[in-house]
Image 1 (cartoon, rainbow, N blue to C red):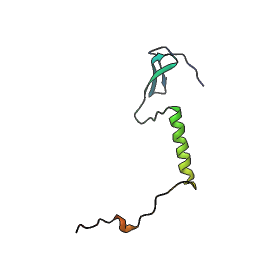
Image 2: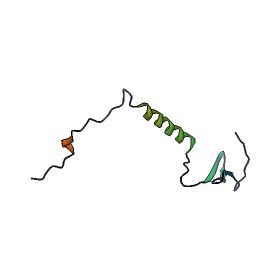
Image 3: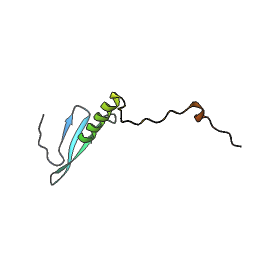
Image 4: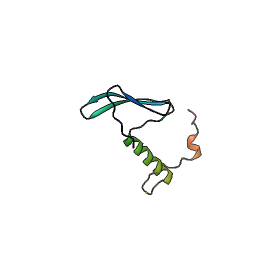
Length: 83
């Protein structure tokens, strides 16, 4: 892991398209600004961990406690005529 020290307003460049800047420091919190191409996905660690977990569970298929919707018969999709 690379460890850097940055002051307010200073930043770092990651590759040629991503820049991270220190926007503010208040107590033990640091506000960061991230400039990146629109196609770059950026997540907080805890959100990314949830996405990975959900994707893993979806790939495993439904578990025995998963409730699936009842199957609808083809006739249920037809529009009924008004009388």
